[in-house]
Image 1 (tube, helix red, strand yellow):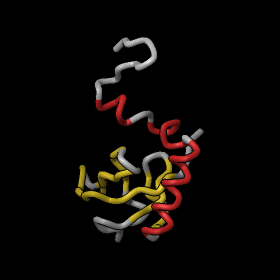
Image 2 (cartoon, rainbow, N blue to C red):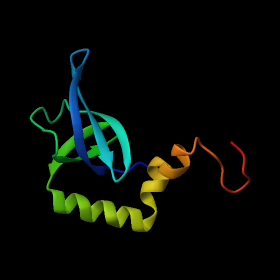
Image 3 (spheres, rainbow, N blue to C red):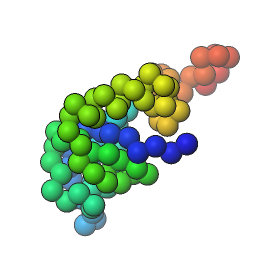
Length: 97
């Protein structure tokens, strides 16, 4: 499944003429293209789908949506387990890397 997920902009930079941002999705940080929302600023929230910020979102709505997605397990399904990733991809079921 591929979701449109709310995320908070951490920083913005120009990469080869494209406006890009590091966006935090409840603990998982990904690179996102901001070309569809050229006036989005650091600290603001946006709905992101397949690496593109599509719509500005208020903080409360973003937090509620992220909490709901987390409760349903959709964030792990979409992004993987950030704790497992931080541990170097260790598979906790069989102890393998």
